Image (cartoon, rainbow, N blue to C red; front, top):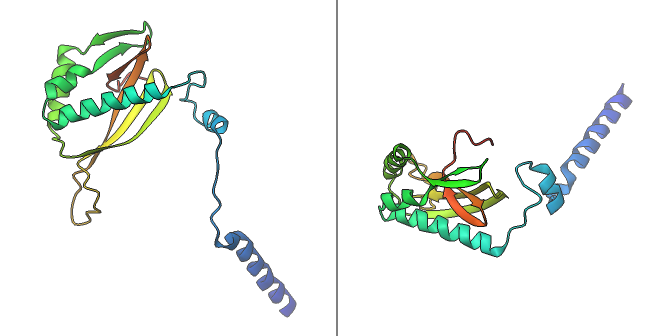
Length: 170
């Protein structure tokens, strides 16, 4: 019986030591090809240039700065609707424009930070940004920070800021 107890303790110690891995964190490196395979939203045929990134970032900054300055009409006027089937661009409907103006005016922007840009495809590109985040961990009450997404689509080699549509399949 003592031998079984001894073997049991040894096996527990062996398991504990091998599962800890010496306390070292192993860095997982994922190459580009593996990343493309793991995310079906990414169109592997499209290659983006620094000009694409610059254009999208400039338009996102312009849009958010217009909102920050309270120029809601100008900001919403930048947005368009894209018919992905026919690859056409049109202004927002009057109803949608009014709805968006009301929505964006409810959350005045004091500060903003662009978190990242995700180029999935020419018809599925996102700019994720945070508004009114002072960077402090405010545990005393609700946060004023809000995470937002601005969508971009490229039609005939030109980028357009759009709204994320309920019909857009994600």
